[in-house]
Length: 437
Image (cartoon, rainbow, N blue to C red; front, side, top):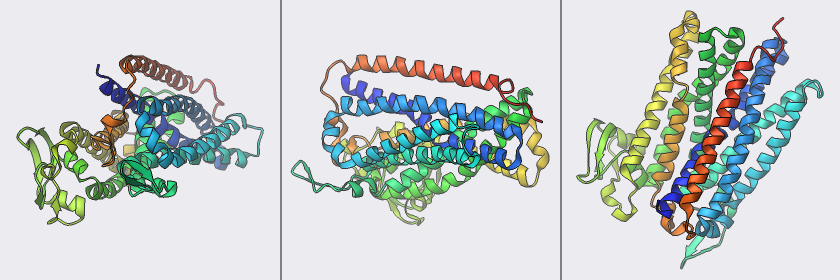
């Protein structure tokens, strides 16, 4: 394997695993805090059991997220030394603040896990809230650093030198809000549907139905609200990308030719050689509207982008289509669930609705992985957009391929351990906790 490809593959593998751990770590503490609040308000022991069960899941993902995040920080220096040499002083602030948020999260989680019957009950609940807030802050700060790579700011690039560095401007770059909003909502969608799907499956099996019903409702409401909000953040992101990274938007939509009233492409197989898309559904003018809020606006195509600066079209387009497809499927499930809550109460106990949630269990994380692929692959060939090429940032150290194989084995092993621990935790429900009165 070529060292450049190996370095990119290792980073992609590490990010692919870490993004799942971090999404769950950002969101699960809020589920836990809501269940804990219900326990304190109602004195219903089931909510206490749900809180304790979810807190163990939070601890598992906190530990695995800490490991995978630490590995990523080393990989940035190991695999991309030229990038870190110049970029580190510019976008290092969000990483430093993320370390502080992680430190607070670790302390709060320790207080929460060992604070049962030791602290004032509301202070104990508050420590759980702090776990969620600090975890969410960590995720947003890391996304701010990635957003800087898509929208570099806070420095002047003169004669190959990075001067007049402003870390605050770098952190609050033009892309940070739209990316942070989109990623945060995506984390709630993915985690909400995954957790709800697991509990729906256990309800269908008839195991500890009361416990899993309470758990399902909390996770489902979080996930469904987020799924309905996500298209709004997607619209904000699309309009932002259209202005800052027209090449990425063109690759996302396989938009080869600059034109007014540009059609929105649904599906299709890009033919990069002949600059066309086969078997696609085209909605006239909708790409112009999504990109610029006007059905008549001109949308830049790949024909206006120098060939050496064009992203890989097929990968970016397919990933974007998968992300949107998964999002629309979950939004449909969310609409059905809210109809059940408001108008059709008899649906709530119907196997078909629970089976929909079971089927939707992986969709959110598939969408997250696809969206991250769009963000990263769509920026190529740049590691810092329009400033530094990815090929110029990679390590000159030979033998990176062996590192890739080693880390692949480590991450697969880590994933298997996490799956085993979560499976054991789910099977233990109903045997470790207090019985309902």
